[in-house]
Image (cartoon, rainbow, N blue to C red; front, side, top):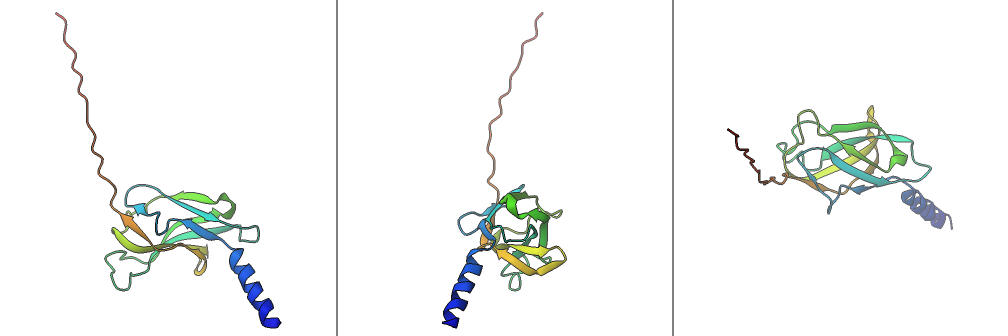
Length: 141
């Protein structure tokens, strides 16, 4: 009986927590401009958190993300359920895969992860091909 209660309690705890819904496997980022992050939350979640970008395969390929994990935004309000993050001052890391967004307790407690996105790719921004129109006006004499 006790083990059944423990299983139910663990299930309830896992259901009632912040969950990153984007980015993820089907919602990637580009290496250009601000990027969106969305999540779900419940009333018992902390009131704010810090968003950190990490690369799962960094140990095997430092070229993807040569620096340590990158804090993207601190003191994000949990009940906002979405935010945009700007690129770090050195720009987005290399195009590639196995990136994750971690929601950490605070910028001082990056090892306390409240939620984690699925792995996602950062892709090259599409090249804008546009046409320009030149207008000439005739001079009157």
